[in-house]
Image (cartoon, rainbow, N blue to C red):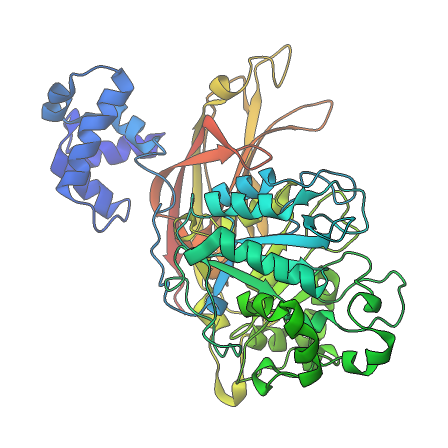
Length: 572
């Protein structure tokens, strides 16, 4: 690690210890911490040697300054020298549609989509990780007098809605003060909708956000909605649509569940004319009177009044569904396959739609093992609610974790300006356009440590010490995708690589830096030995301690890499 020794000697000016002022200057000039103060440097000088040596002789170390060994300990400390800021630093006063929002799919499932248990436990776990959008499928129980949460038309065991609501209330703001949105996939009769309205209002009380009017013309901001719970669903009248038949079909609104509530639950045969599809009408145009007559005795308007983010189901072809209404905003949901079709032919329409409205994407119904799609396809087109199965794990979910490490991990990430700009002739960003090179990201992998603490000695190989290597790559637009890897370092639990890679980036604003460590295995597949994913736009320049995570995205106690990040602007 010649770089570290060299920079220490330079800033210590040849002395054996680095003073407070010299450390502060290093933090400003090398680490890019422009606001670093003398007090910040003093805290490091006091605490790093103390933690390292586990004694109380901090006065001695403070007077001497930081030795080379202590300087290395400081650089390798995730607490003192992390790769990302751990606080909210983006503007939080724009409408919700201006943000990517940490969104779960079927948030109540403990495992696969067909036969796993439904529970509030995965909801609690996700909220503690920073999730902001919780999806609940709500159905009548067998006696039609209570409401359950389950994945309809499957073998999943249900959980009571009230249990989920109480857990959401208790844990909603454990990781972030910004609003939690509950999306109801509603399969209820009007009387049970009224019961849900009562449950919701009694559970959340003043935490619940009510829209000022039925017509939502612009979404409020995350800042306005701090510590609030929002409900998003289709207004009740949209559940009164008659089905052409009771045959199994994929719903094109909010979910991939097969089948929907049948018409006889909401309409008598004699009143069938009152149940014609009115979903093309705006909420802002006044209610259809037959619906009001039907709903009012059962109390469903109370349910309707809870909905602060209305889910629309516009009629017509895809291009019509993506039309922007200047008088109202909605949430539209598309399955991943329909979304892929949409961006293939109407990519700019999607971008334009998401500038004011909220677009939710959810996994296709065939992902029964709770696997996920690549969330970047949604973010590139401005989709705010890119819903993934949080109970699974894999590279798609690692990308999700990486994106939402941005902005202090608060669950809301401001969309890049280019996704919100409107040019001449209503022109918006086209994700298919190849853009010029914008910046170079230089990544140096110095070394790693912690495997001997987080893994058993024989975990990787029974007969010989491990051979670690690191893969570093970019996930982003097609032009920016690239993966490189270090050489293998044989027989060392604390491998030193000292290798640098350069990544040309055209859209750094949504690029994610993927890092994986593997242990080489000659006869079988290489062993997984840690991973992380970091938002490129938020990387702190300089030499940083990068913590690693397991396959499920859980942080290892000790495992970390020492890396250096440098941005080089490209001159045109």
